[in-house]
Image (cartoon, rainbow, N blue to C red):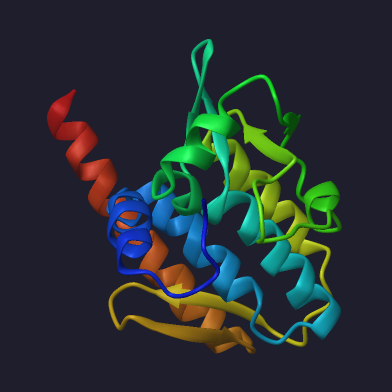
Length: 177
């Protein structure tokens, strides 16, 4: 069973393999970035979505349902339970998930299933876009820092960087064609 206490096995067996996947790591990171500058109510909603995805999420792969949540990957009993017919499995919808109550003393009675990480990321971006925040933030992978997009010169610099990346990709495409 999942334990709410810090657990090396949970971190190594649950989080590390998933965070090695760039698509999943970006999903997890975007939830964290979304929490910056929002209300306490929105932070609670984001932490609940985190619980039902990063910790206890399920994902479709063809006709099968697979676990990707670290709380499942590091707890064999709950993993077996989550993939059985006993708990309720609902489709992932962030606005619904965000207000779902959860507990950490026993297995979850409800798990949320996404069709793909790509779809989950798109759904989360839409959900987060409706939150009231004073500024727009962006992770800069080159400086490994959070940037505040607060004025036209910052946005202009970002657009220039994006254009340079697109030029590089176009050059590669032309060479490969």
